[in-house]
Length: 219
Ligand code: BG6
Ligand code: MG
Image 1 (cartoon, rainbow, N blue to C red):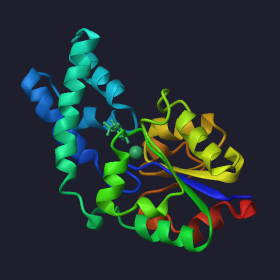
Image 2: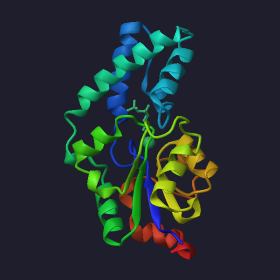
Image 3: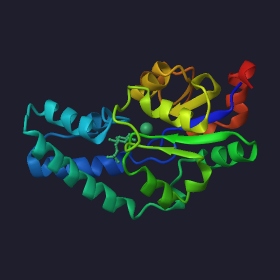
């Protein structure tokens, strides 16, 4: 029986990829590092520190840990400032409708995000009230593809993984859901989330009716 839903944030509820891109690009330009949208795609779903390591590897750069932390913080300051312009108009189409529907049907709902800025993003969207539990980058130490953030969220909801559906737009996010034995819905292209139990191209198609009809025997 499905009793709960766990949502990733960036790329599922709202599209922050471009804001992350701008902030990493600004830092990379300052550091004379190569950074483009293709590389930005590889950062989808992974933590800030894992992200800067991917960028440094790509550029063949190695620095001491304190400097890496300082640079990641610099990127984050740029990113956080850009969040001030986010408003309740910035939900991905379909996301607010699905969250509203789930609440009205009485399902438990949690956030399972790698971001340490999740609370700020939810506040900007006016989305805090949709969630019974907020699991973010501060809740666990092992990030996706480890299942820890989803296990944290389901445990706080008081549910077992088999009673929850995880919504994710990242390859590593679906890996994490599967590692934790959750049911999974992938949002995005086949080459990214084709390994999810079911997949929708966008959140707009991911209505409760569609989800229920795919997981028929679980409702
Ligand atoms: C994920 C994003 O949700 O959060 C990643 O998909 C990002 O791109 C990660 O690196 C960490 O975010 P933050 O806000 O803690 O830097
Ligand atoms: Mg995501």
